[in-house]
Amino acid sequence: EAPGANAALAYARAQLGKPYRWAGAGPDSFDCSGLVMMAWDQGGVHFPHLAQDQYDMTARIPVSQALPGDLIFFGTPDNVYRVGIYSGNGQMIDAPETGQNVSVQSIYWDSLLGAGRVHS
Image (cartoon, rainbow, N blue to C red; front, side):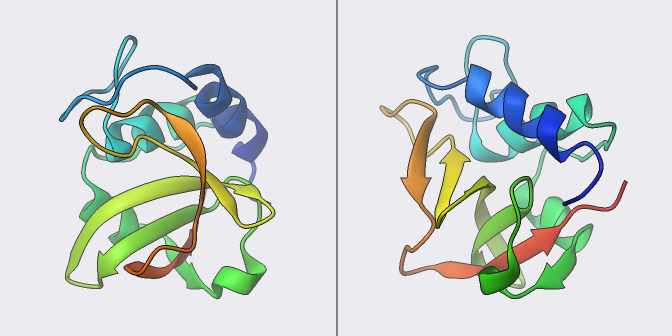
């Protein structure tokens, strides 16, 4: 796994149960890319607060080879609209949508695009 993945995952797990808020980047609420940005900041990798940019900054890997800390993307290569942090066993930590809280969810949604490996 990428250096910093453990720190990123620990941060993400600590946010479980906090509410989703569009453009949120903590400490009290998050959107999907804000959670990734803040979590990986703990791992020493600085992402912009936009899922598309996070997709563009990571290396494409098969979902079957995703490791904890890798990013899971949803949408299309030119329109990435959701991202989660892979936590293992087909699950991710994600800030899903308005009215929901940061939670552990399956990565297997209709719009699953692929996985990204973070470079430190």
